[in-house]
Length: 494
Ligand SMILES: Cc1cc2nc3c(=O)[nH]c(=O)nc-3n(C[C@H](O)[C@H](O)[C@H](O)COP(=O)(O)OP(=O)(O)OC[C@H]3O[C@@H](n4cnc5c(N)ncnc54)[C@H](O)[C@@H]3O)c2cc1C
Ligand SMILES: NC(=O)c1ccc[n+]([C@@H]2O[C@H](COP(=O)([O-])OP(=O)(O)OC[C@H]3O[C@@H](n4cnc5c(N)ncnc54)[C@H](O)[C@@H]3O)[C@@H](O)[C@H]2O)c1
Image 1 (spheres, rainbow, N blue to C red):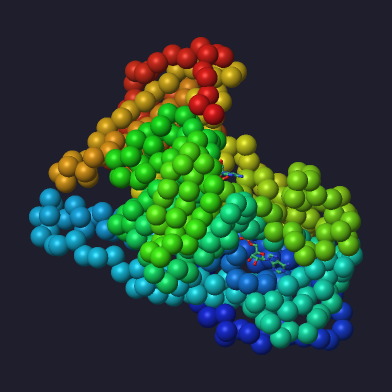
Image 2: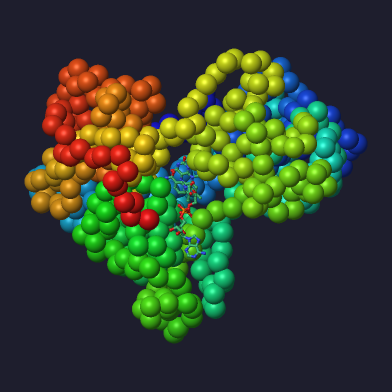
């Protein structure tokens, strides 16, 4: 994994550029061609590209340069995934001839290393923006009108004096924030934001929510040796993924000893002498040291002044058209704030497209209808294109599947099967979807996405020789359909 993708390798820490980042504190109005609010995945890309195309660009950030992905999302999460994976590799060691005892997981040590890596990445973002000629501000931005912003103090710069900015184009890229649901004691729950800063590893963890975050944290903490229980209101985890994959994932969670509580909602959370007690609405009581609430995220628009500029929202999201324009001319929105895909690559792509559209149209195109997605559970799950249940609405299908014990697990007798699946339109032979759960699933599906996004056929996959011995080769060696599925006959799990 490389991050950030446009890095040149230089990494001055944020503090090195502090003076340059709020050059005109408390002075008169400063003018820009384009001003970005929020230095996350989308905002940084938009600001950098616009500046490189010759625009006078400013950007403001209130808490973390690099935004959610780098500081409270993809990166620390993936580092946790690697930490847990390393533990599993050590546990497999004796079977491969490495006679090492399984050490205890040292959470504080891991946290220290992770934080150092994040500080390094934050520094890269700052220096990248500075090198592109973007003017950086630290503070909380609020719209005052269609072309005016005020920057006030924030966690990054608590003492800053208010500063006025005028810009021809304003880009809202403030991302999203964890949603909290209310029940007695719910204030005792933490969210993903706090997980990354816990002082101690929770030995007993309860998770509320069976989506991306709930599943990923369940896998990571179970890998660290914590007792993990997960409660979710639906029958199965991870709606929006192929049903067969979801069922396979649940089998793997059971094998890993994660306690699943489907069809449950939290009733109450109480502090007990020895930790917390989460009571579910089916009466189950879960003892925990921490309870993570992972019930979705919502656009970060509170205090942004949308009403002062007249920017229209719907269900808490900023409404945009396909050119990222809001209803107010000159104000745009990209990334999670418009609550469309809520992933880093899509926020980055939107930032790039917007900057190019404004300053040098390139005719660049990304297929936002076929966004590859992954859930970094211990055995990752990844997907591109249509699930079987989605594809079967309009197509007669041929389904190809392969289920096997990954070679690396055989000698250590580590249980759990990998599973791969192709959803193919019977009539045209076009691959409509590729799905996998198992080692390296995310990396493998990234490459399969090239086939699916470009409308390749199953026959074209068959023309590709295998690379042996790999897991990925299964995708080019599945010859006989597992089943035929007639249009309209698949009942989704829900
Ligand atoms: C735990 C977790 C794991 C994730 N894992 C993945 C993953 O593996 N892969 C993936 O693709 N996506 C993942 N995501 C989602 C991904 O992080 C987001 O989709 C992405 O960061 C959105 O980018 P953005 O630019 O819209 O906003 P953000 O990255 O959230 O950036 C917005 C920035 O705006 C700042 N801001 C907000 N309001 C103001 C204001 N008024 N003034 C100044 N600054 C402001 C914020 O401080 C923030 O830095 C994960 C998210 C979480 C929470
Ligand atoms: N690997 C990745 O790409 C990755 C990882 C983490 C997060 N993300 C992004 O962050 C977003 C947020 O993640 P998330 O896991 O919080 O959300 P999610 O939408 O994936 O899952 C939310 C879960 O909470 C449940 N829920 C929602 N409202 C509820 C309520 N009122 N009561 C009880 N349960 C409720 C849902 O049924 C679901 O199980 C994701 O949608 C994704 O876009 C991506």
